[in-house]
Image 1 (cartoon, rainbow, N blue to C red):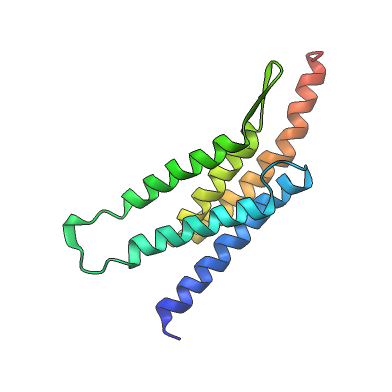
Image 2: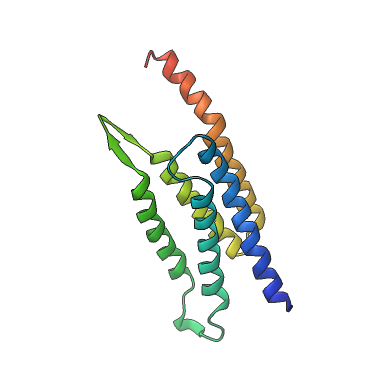
Length: 145
């Protein structure tokens, strides 16, 4: 296999792996978007990014690969809207929708070869989803909520 194909396979696998890591926490908490959603969003985002960067050689100044990344954000917004529910007087699913958005950003980062940035983002997402939830609960108890 040529080096480009090997790199693309690595990018696909790495983005999927990082999406799984973020999705694990959501799956564990029985949220509407879990392992499969997060890993597929990250996989799709990395593929769109790779295709936009590698798929148009010689396109010159008339081509702007950042347009694909912008459209990924729009598309993921629709997915996120599907997991947000208004129930009673509150909103549910906002954190899950945001974690799907972050999984997409991780995929774009991997597609642009920002591997360490993508890994750190996945780590921070896990910290935010798990550790900060406990801190948030403690604050709510302190406030009598």
